[in-house]
Structures are given as C-alpha cells and as structure tokens.
Image (spheres, rainbow, N blue to C red):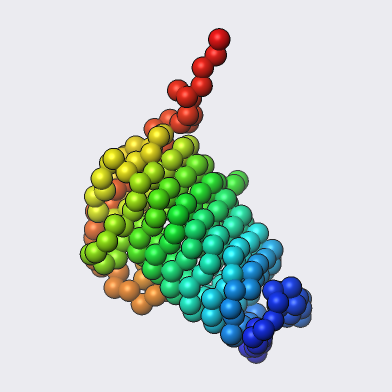
Length: 245
C-alpha cells in the first residue's frame, strides 16, 4: 500500500511526525505531495522505505538518514544528504549549496546542477564510502575539505562553466572525477590531478550506470568518456601555512 501525505500549508514538524508514524507502522512506500520548502524531510530515518517528494523540499533533506530512498521530483534546497549515514537521495532537478555536507555513507544523485561547496567535508566511515553524482555543473569549492568518498561530475551538455574555482580546497582524502579536461588553475591548495586509467573507470562505472537508470540517460557516452581525477596532494594540505618559533 502507498501512503499519501498532503504537505500543503503543513509545517515541517507535523509533516515529519506523519512520515515517522507511517514508518513505525511498517509502511514501505510514502508519497508526499505539494511540498514547498519544508526542511528536514526524513531527518534521521532508519530502514528500507521509499519516500517520493513532489515539490521543492527545504534544507537538510535526508539529514542523518540511514537506509531510506528519497526521490525528489523537483529541485532541492541546500544540504541534501547532510551527515547522511546510508540510503539514497535522487533529485530530478538541481540542488543548492553544500550538497552531501559531511556525508559518511550512502549516495546522492542530482540530475542537473548543484551550487557551491558540493561534497564539503565528505568522509569515509568504517566500510562506508559515500558518493555524490552530479549530472550537470558544480559551482566553486567542490569537494572542499573532503576526507573520503567519491564526487563525480558528469557535466552533461556543452555550454557554460562546468566547474568553477577552488576545486578540492584542503582535500585530504577521497577522489573527485570530472568528465573531460579542466583548467588546472581552478584547483585549490592541497589538490592535484591524478592518473586516470581503466581501474578508475571501473570504479565509477556502477555510479554512472545507476545515474542513467534513475534519470533515463543514455549511458554509453558517459561510460566511454575520459575523466579528470583529482585527489589530495598530501595528507596535510595546509602544513606549509603554519610556522613555529
């Protein structure tokens, strides 16, 4: 059975109470209609449940989530997947700043563009390796202070700046993959371009295939493309900025 929740004129607190009540009752499929800016949807939820969000959710979608699948038919606000520990977020549109902030498990797929500081503070936790896949472009400071995980920018389309300045500022773990070549002047302190070979192509292949399944995109052009691989230049990117008497 599908549980429907009408979020029109509903504050995020009672909305999330209804979601939690349905999950406690064992419901596995929830559809939320007329979403407009409600924050913290599915915050901290655990378990196998699919939640479809029709509209534009507010900030911190899926924060601290561990297990559920969120499917957004619309754009998302800032920080979807904030500190997420597991599960999947699928955004059929664009997303704001700080997507996947401090995420330590699970996957976030954004069909179109994201704002500033996507993947900031992403980290690996025990056996978990979080993944952020962006179909379009990313603004400045992508992967800032990354400590683990994978950020993949597929840069579909052929117009506009696909990544901006300050890429991987202070990165000390994890990897960023960007389809095609980039201007290395866009790299920030502590980041460098690393070799990309068939081993790395095999690593991102499942993410590309899953992205294409979610959004109905042809996989072949993306699977066969070349990618720029970016990682940390050292484990202490700002070591040279400190002095001792």
